[in-house]
Image (cartoon, rainbow, N blue to C red; front, top):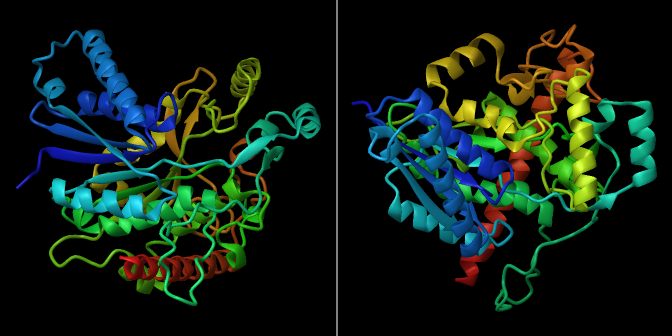
Length: 422
């Protein structure tokens, strides 16, 4: 029996950022593409009740504007069937993550899609001399794959055990702030609600990781999976995101996937995807408003000279995540069958018309198949990426297996510590 009720959760849906834009675009695309018999429950998470209230208020205003634009009234069936729900979670507080998972298990019948958007940049500023120089000599690639952001090194979360109740002789392990916010907090949340994702009716639940064009291979090391020693913790976390998502369907990673998402008896297990928003003008780096204006102008110029990745506005950047969230499972499965699993990115043409396309990943290519990225236009190719070889592909698969093994070991370690503290 077909289920007409969709449940979608978006983390980090604050203010005017990408998460909020994903919610707005989800609402718009749902109204545009779904019949009036369908309904959408959109669950958003922020770190505080105040931010949740602001987001819900903004989304209600957005629904009102959408209704007015399409000349719909509030009693139009589909408009009336958009339900908003706000929850709070601090992804750097593992107790908070567990509390949210428990609450969702009690209150929701299922979850069709979770969009793992929340995160931190950990940036402290800009290396301005390097920024000016690289923009002058290598535009627009220098504003597509920037190397001039400055970051904290070695930032760790606050104690997960404020009561200092760890058993005698046990030391609390370090937990990287950016790693926990961007990857590990989400990882624990998905594991905690896997039953809801398995309850998705008719199609497997979808786990959509939000990646980045800045997922540089050189920023990541399996020996420092949290990026604690890296001057590029954000880029490290996004490279890890690519590796986890793209290797999640490989046979070599299945022993660890089955621990992370135990296969259900009567349903297909959840599927994992990775997307990115292109280059948006957001507040992930704190800048004076004049610099924000200048930055935005530069991003538009990059688009006008031919860059496909400068979506600029978060709403256009939300194109790929929303497309993956709402596309039919038959379409997604057919694309993966024909072209392999890929990283879907939001791209634009010179006029600003957006669409979702595959993005090349070092060691994986376009779809994990040797030769699939040969001849790709340079303007679409990330830094550090070369034509995929069989050796590269095997190395990526081994790296994926090692990453999943490390993530599962870390999850089990922390869940054991938290259980002992109960």
